[in-house]
Length: 153
Image (cartoon, rainbow, N blue to C red):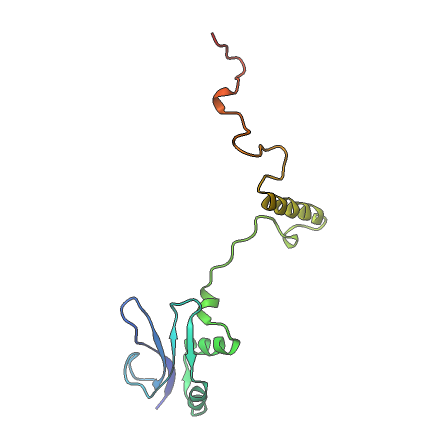
């Protein structure tokens, strides 16, 4: 009998909750199991992963083969970080300023100046350049701007 460590679904519709089980490799996904050795809930952040390492090691010592997903969960517990949170976490947006690593050689001073301008703008709440108006109230309304070549009369 080929024993597999794999997941079996126990959650309701649109609410996946998984058990980590030792089961005969020929049985159905949600079929008969030999032993429940853990659980995995991917919904909360971070994901909930609870494994009985002693029983998992017991089954592996007797020839049980973990599925790829169970292997990933075991590694995540060993690292101390949930697998789903690490894999499914969206990449953080890139900062507005270019980093020194992205700028060709010789342009480090421009990168430093750009970062200083952005940080001073964020700190004061006003634009760093003097060319732009500080606020909308300081700018002249569009209907009061004289146009060249147009005469009133």
